[in-house]
Image (cartoon, rainbow, N blue to C red; front, side):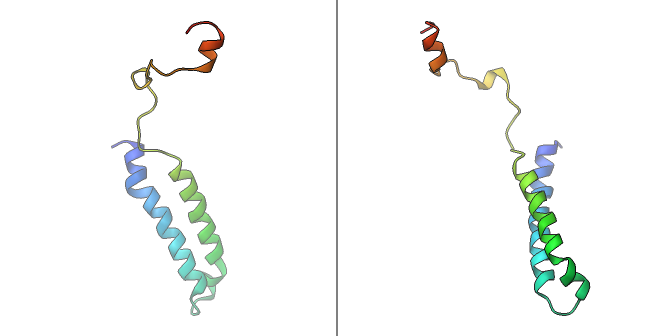
Amino acid sequence: MSFRSLNQKFFLPGSEIVMIFGMVALCQPWSLLLHRYGLTIIIVGLVGFIITSHIGPGSIGTDEDVSDDVFDVSDHREGKA
């Protein structure tokens, strides 16, 4: 199992759950400890979500993925058209 599949299966939903738990902890009136650290829990979940959402499920760039028919302006300027 690769890191990307672990990320999509566990880390991304886990960070969303941490954010939701932080919101619940911030709004509940029973535990002063949870209320005190609710915003910190939300921020930790948000940072985790931002980091894990930038790890895409696709493959790491290989030469087979690049198409040769793409027109590039720099090729035209050098006279390679």
